[in-house]
Length: 216
Image 1: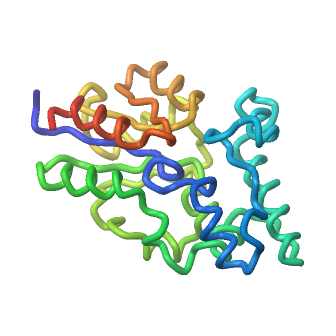
Image 2: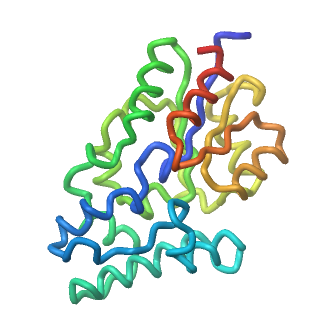
């Protein structure tokens, strides 16, 4: 296998812990009563009919998070109309709390081996904000960031995958793409990009599989 290889990561849920996993942090930061936030997405679909609707393609992922942002904003007596406000108010002051430990380990291992790293996200700056991204741990280790906030090309559009491959300057067979959304995995399959369908409830397994595919 050529040493010119790359790990391509989705951001939200793959590099970061999900907002489902940090309800306690959100509640503490916003001064909400513990247990105020009950929606658990993939960790408990029965608790979250809106998540099920998103998985059934009845609403978009962006619509889902805008709805949740509005709900949490109302709990603190404010009108939140974008995801950036939600993230900044909930946990933006402490980006270290958001980085998955498994992601940290994988990023460091990939760079130590001399491989490339990329982010392919539909909403990195849209959801998290520019300042959050600039302060995010290890963000400087990424060689390429392709963010549909600016490109306006959302996964699973084939052009999104082709753009990150072009910016990496690598053949698709030399890369592994990791994402937690089935539709984005379907997009990778359609362009013959090797992939790992990341399960946010079992992050260690997902990263172990991706690293093994890269020969690490």
